[in-house]
Length: 110
Image (cartoon, rainbow, N blue to C red; front, side, top):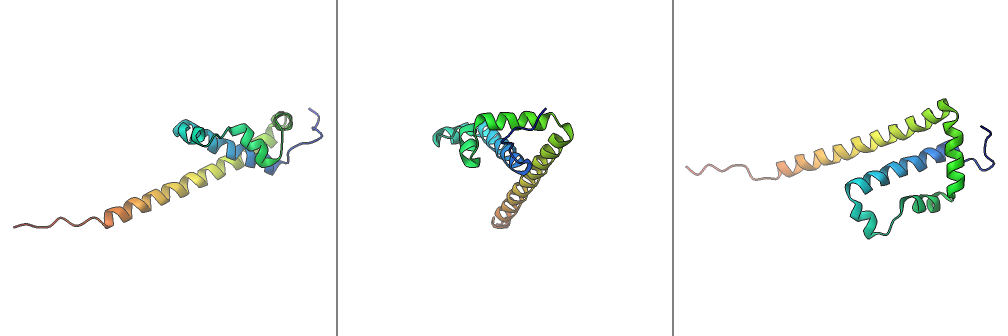
C-alpha cells in the first residue's frame, strides 16, 4: 500500500490508539462519565490530535499493511497501558494500606 500524503506519524498514532483504549475502557466501565461530559470518543480524539476521520483511517490502513510497523505501534500502546494499570494498582494498594493502618486497633474490654 502506498503511504498516504498526510500519514499520521507513528508516535502520534500510538498516542491516539492509547487514548482510544483508555476512553474505551472508561466507556465500558463508567459509560455515564462520557455521557455526562458529552464526550464522543472519536470526535474528541480528532480534535485533540488535529486530524480528521479520513486521515486516521488511511493512516491506520497504511500501518496495518506493514505488520512489523503495526506491531511496534501496538506494543508501544500495550506497554503504556500496562504501566498505567500498574501505577493505578499501586496507588490503590497504598490507599488500602493507609486506610487499614488508620483503623483503630481492637480494644480489649476485659
